[in-house]
Length: 445
Image (tube, rainbow, N blue to C red):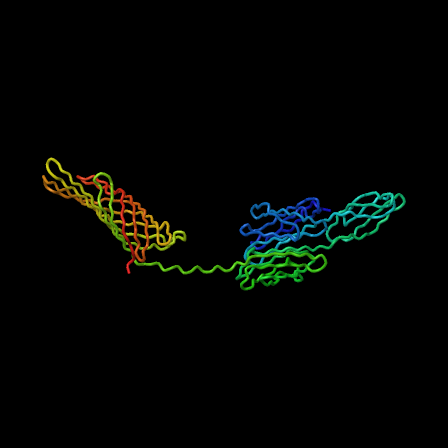
């Protein structure tokens, strides 16, 4: 029978992206009802998805190694003989170039015959011999046989001590031409359409397959003798395409398949033009940096939106330039008299502001920035000569803002932490600390 032999098909040249090649099917024949499976090896470009379809039974991928793809074929539960047609193709966007192979599925049945009582009976089916079985006292005998697809007769050989007879008997084998179909790709494009790949028996012509389509029309594109491939052209406005396929003739099978229709992506709405007008703001509050380093603070900002750098970030960023004033002072009375000390700082810097959250008119922002801080320290004692000294320090800060928009104006409250150390020959002060301020900002007309 040769059921244990692999079906070797020639592999010539380099495997092209659009043309998978069936390397082997082992075994090439299966007996239905025994629970056996076959291993199929296909050479194909791993850069593309390899699709598989069986006219009857099922194909399951079991692994890939380089260009070799392995599948397990499981036959159907039916017991009558038939051929399983296996198809393989790559999803490249072009017309599928289909590679095919076949597995002969043998049916099992009991052949009942009448002959001379006690005769030894054998049954020849193609190249296989089944039996011998011995006829009973009434000449009845039953011989279990296996029938390959396409076989309609068997030879019954009966032998006794006196003679040997051979006679041909018909086999009541139903004709079967199973078919199955799959869309390629699995979602059909509304603009370019798709393909319908059909696995059908070798005795059927693709042009005689009957298609009933809903939501599309079909055009046969495969050559005569090749696996059937139809170009599917969706109807305007259809959301899905469904097909019912019928193979003509006695034993012709049916199949059904459906696919969603993918509409062309609508172009995104044009982005709102970025407002290039600067946003101006003013703030006032106080700060505390420990000890006498406490006082009032003023600030002014000018900000512009940063163009979207990433879809997630979008228009959340703004770049700010800011200038301000902070003052702290100390007055003490000593035995020599009163002494006044004052520290005035004018921070100048830049910051990056990000809108972290927004709900309606309310928004939460984060700010990080820094810059230079020119400052002036003055001392005016009642018992000596007054003097002043100036220097420049650096600072960095991070802030959290909560804003609420009232028409063109946004009212803002801010909590800010600042690091800034101011030192001279007579001064060692922390000019930063924790600041709380409130204000408003809006765009120029």
